[in-house]
Image 1 (cartoon, rainbow over the protein chains, first blue to last red):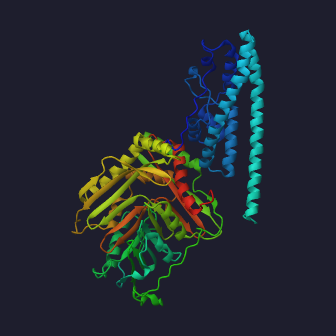
Image 2: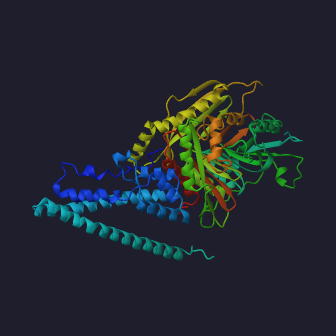
Image 3: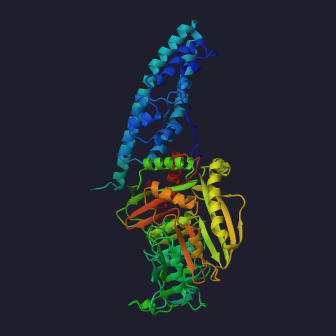
Length: 195
Length: 430
């Protein structure tokens, strides 16, 4: 039925060459190459191979692609077949862990969609901060485009794992706090099971 | 199967109860009763005057109609026509259907209440009420409990895990692509349990409040509020409402309008709807001297979803016996519609049996009432739960056509289940 949720599916990652186009500012070229590489390296599995590795039905892989929760690298030379890597296998294994614990897929997908939409907003703002406070000052103060390009790449390569670390730790703490608060609330209501 | 002695009927109006509106009747119902409620009209019923199990197989509707015809034969034709309630399983091969003339039926048209009693004299019975005239029988209203169950509602699993249901929908779309079937409805369930039994009456009252335009029913454990009128028959006049094609409601007026517009213009939803309309036309065409079907679907808004809707009205023609078919017989002719089974009907049923992985029971079967004149109302049992003591089994399904996306169908069923989950557990999230 299609329109229960308004959700634009993420495009498949374009090959790095298309980013390094003639109109790109030379200062951005190294960064552009690094952004493309992030997914490309080591991605060799087809959807079917990914499904088999993960022990999940192909229909789920296809659904997650449509939802933008999974996206493979695509090369025109490879007939635009999406390719997946070990990181994607890891993502699916994590999802399987939740399903096997008993979470229904429908609820998990609903939560994943809402998480995705929330994260996109934050990600867009984080990119905006990078542009305003890292990129623009570099481009504005460094004359040599190659040097500017290298400085931007260095900044990106330091900031990406730092950002991931902050977000991961923050979410973990937030999740544990939510669980503690829920437990305290149910004890207060006298609803905790005494089995 | 004709019984050895005739059913005895007696009825009386009950002005002492005042102007009762439909859901107010629930206060008079014992916990294990029956009900059929629609806006200000309705009935509640309890006890068994006469009951028939039509068995399984294609002949079950005919068996039920014949047996009921015999049971009503002793009605004098003058007094208020007695009523039978019935519910049928979706799959003809599945047992569990019934037709029942209750011992006591209390009905209202919104103004005047009426009690209709029925019993078999040869049944050994010490019940004094049998000897009491319906005009004098004490009827006490007791306030219903506030909660559907006295304990917390907990998730009890599903017949088919979501992941496998998603895969089944994907398999169905492949069959559709191969041309083996054009539309198939796939359903799934969601069970909950509590430490205290579920009270059907509390659930029914919540459903009448939340879905006033739906037909709320309690039929031997099957409780629900269906918007889908399969057939209403008054004399030779019949009505039906075809619902197929679903969208969510928006949180505000503008998103609601967007969802509605998308629904009305979606090829996938319009195709799904067109199959349902065609199946009804095919079932009724030969039985009616006149049949009028809305040329274009309109929008039906419920609390949590909106549907494409097509209204049907018609005039039944006399059959080979010279009789106008009863509401029960018309319901049997219409079932299963493409809205709950698929197109073509037989192939879709085979796909459901192969892929769905569960027994629907009476979910998506006809449920309703028919009286001794043959008038009645049947709905398709949707938005319902099978209550069984302290356990409830909820259902939801979606129509799969060529353009269906499995994850979208999964999400649609999650939203449909939510309606009944909220009725059972308004504060919780099971």
